[in-house]
Length: 248
Image (cartoon, rainbow, N blue to C red):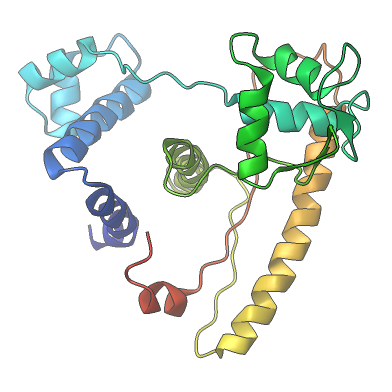
């Protein structure tokens, strides 16, 4: 069971820093146990069988199976605006007018959400540095939306990204999956060496992800399959993490 420790420690750190008390995390873990057992045996499995597999009491299982997660995944309109602006040649990333009936930011924003004033979206995008405004024109500075640090949006991204990565690795272990999950790791390196490696990794990874993004967007809009994918990478500097224990 000690294999769980490297997985649980970062989660515990996040929970403590965000003020999520243990009973709250424990309740989510109970839900996850029930969902995992039910996924293995199907919806027709009994509470007794789930109890045997998970160690949870049947009365708790019956209650948990009857509950529905109140949190629904919502699409981020800022991310959609940036993605459409970058992808649709109608909207020039180098600059479009703020207002107008043609290819303007106003028409772009309203194509995503009609219940929020376009200026509200624009002010937020300018504030986070994603967009620049000069003389009634706005230009796009980034290719993708980056949620503010510590926000619920960033936590949602963390959950989706890390969740898929862990799901891929677990599938390789328990199901004989062939998901790509490889890494390289060294220790005893200087700060200068880490900096060089980090810059190289970011450059190459950015190029790869942009190529994948272009390929994915290039598939026919009529394609309506059951599959989805997520691809990414991470670079972790352990010394930097330990040297800044007060970082969020």
